[in-house]
Every structure is written in C-alpha cells, then in structure tokens.
Length: 327
Image (tube, rainbow, N blue to C red; front, side, top):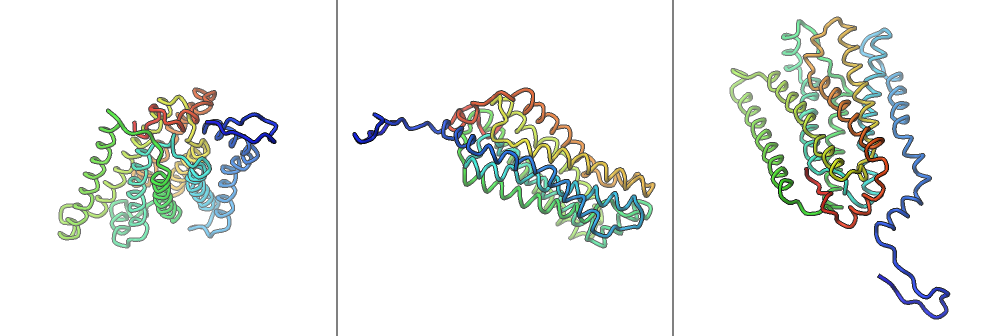
C-alpha cells in the first residue's frame, strides 16, 4: 500500500510498512524494556523472602521459619508468573501464540485447586475429618496456598477476557475443532459430576461419600488437568516452530514456584515426622512436579529448538493457518 506525497516532499513516495515490520520495529524500540522484564523472577524471590521473614511463623524454630519463607516465595513466584503474559498480550495487542485450550483448562483447574485449599484450610468439619484420618495431624495446606489458588483463578479469568478482547486467531478447522469440542465436553461432564456429588453429600449427610473424599477427588481432578493443560501449548509451539506470543518469564517463574512448593511440602513433612502430609496433599505435590516437567520442555523449546525463529510473529499477524489456537 502506497501514498502520494506533495512536490515539496523530497521523497517521491512512501511505502507503508506491513504489520509484521511495524511489530518488529516496535519491538526494537522496546528493547530498553527488556531489562525490566528480567526483574520478574528476582523481584518475586525478594518479595517472598521478605514476607516470609516478616510474618509470624506457625511454630517457633528455624524449620517453621524456613517453611514460611519457602511458602511465600513460591506463592509470589507462581502468582507473579501470570503477569508477564498479561502484559505481553497488552503490548502486542494480540494473543496469537497463546493456546486458548491451555487457558480454559487452567481456569477450571485453579477453580478446583482453590476449592480444595479453601475448604481444607477454613472448614472446621473438614479439618477435623482430616485429623481423624491422619492420626491427629493437620493438613499441610497453608494460607499462602489458599491465597495463591484464588489469585491464580482470578488472573486466569482476566487472561481469558484478554483472549476474548484481542481474539485474532485463525479459524479452527479439522482436528482442532473436534479437540476443542472434546475439551469443553470433558470439562462440562466433570463439572456436572462435581456439582452432583456436592449436592448428594449435602442431602444425605455423608452417608456414602464424605466431604474429605470429595476434596480428594477434586484434588485428583486438578492433578489430571495439570498433566493435560500444558499439552496444547507445547503442541502449538512445536507446530509454529516458535514460542513467540508465549512469554518465557511465565515459565521461569512457574519453574521456581514448582521447585519451592515441593520443597516446602517435604520440609513440613520432615519437621513433623509425618510423611502422610505428602499423601494428604497430592494436589500440591503433583502440581509442583508436573509444572517442573513441562517448564523444562518449554525452556528447551524457547532457548534451544526455536531460538532462531524470528519470523513467526509476522506470519501470525498475517493470519497463518499454522497458528491455530487449538491443538
């Protein structure tokens, strides 16, 4: 596309840059901001350590204090991990490169995780049932677990709202369309089962199914979703041969949070000499391990396999069919 210029203009005509070039130029102008992006990880670590040292620990001793530091540091690492993607979407005014299936599964999974942590932390009846079935020991769920899960659910909803606002994916076709239907159908069935089970327990006073068992089922649903949810993003990166549109800072923070989460759980079990805390909180253990596994895959994709893929963003902006938002 070209425009004419007046005779006073020293140039004969000016070619308007295509959108891909504009985005590349814009990214070059934003180079000074890269150093600010590099503050995501150390900033989260500093916040976690400071809060963990300042807040009162549940029990005296270095072990309890270390657990507080680990807990709040993983909380900030995992909580902050959602924001680089939110800001990247705003900066690009696009969500191409971010899997919608991943975000849908993420929202449902964190809803389950929040319900599990909130009830196990705040419900006196469920806490009593847990102690009865675990030799008088309390669960390993901490306040930072509850706050993290609630915050994660809300920020994931914000990311979904961004996808709806900036929606610029190519149309779904073929297997992608079928798999989208499969994801939504599966989540609908699981959600219906969970609501039905909760109504049954409330109506029949836990005669056949206890609230604690129900929470264990919810935790297992979260674990299954955590195993599955990363697959659409891994596949999208592979199909596009690029990680453009998927921020690596999300991955680095998620990896940090996963390692610290598992470390806190193991430390708490060791200090109380009660390793049933690990089996009693399967969601936290598996969530940390699964996130670490997939984060390593993302790191290999970003820094090794597709590090030289510089043209993917321009292709996506022009509506390349290889960047479908599904599988």
